Image 1 (cartoon, rainbow, N blue to C red):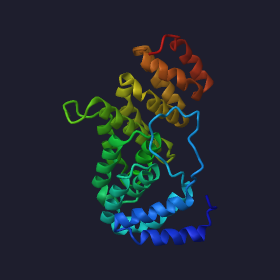
Image 2 (cartoon, rainbow, N blue to C red):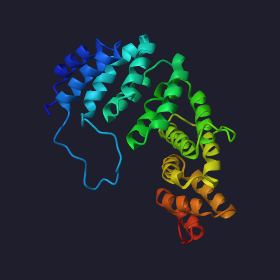
Image 3 (cartoon, rainbow, N blue to C red):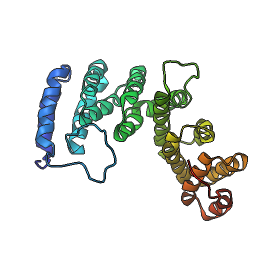
Image 4 (cartoon, rainbow, N blue to C red):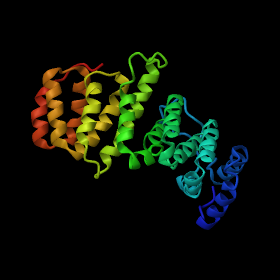
Length: 279
């Protein structure tokens, strides 16, 4: 794998994006770029527990960032062409192609938010990769989150609580949408300028009380992020839930949130987090 020399990379990407309106030619050129910078000697870690995953070209992150940066003006000025290109890239069963697709739709103007929402939801239901879930929930929704935060929160609400009479979604798809919604809350919580944390608590309350076991790690991520912003509120909420109904789920979540809370809050919660068999 050659070292990244920025002027050379910029020139290579310039030749690539000449074909942005022709997805087939763009993909051929992109393959050449990935072959040039990819690390063919790298192998998956033996410690990895993931059995099924997309193949990867092992391309350094700066290469993808440069492609996105140089394509951003085209996403802003010719959004239909970039949407078409993104759909084509996603159809490649290779990690970096799908990363690039997800990153590009995050640059699409707010006027095309419904196209963005549609692709994020469709791709999320096709996805099994944690990395791509993170990109879809954060990067793909970046423009909408910055320019129309309330619109995004309303859409997240529909992902967290799909209509019960929606027969088009099976159980695994509902969980996938709920995971997308929970992960899409993280950038809001982590933004010091976002002050409507009560809205976040309202959105997650039903899932804290009852949800699929598969959502516990995502709920925990949300709680830990909230605890870094407002530990007193998180401690109060957990105490209320534990006193109301000390279920296996809320006990599991509270126990793993304790270390993120101030000592005085830990002392009040510990007696309520009694040891019990966890499902």
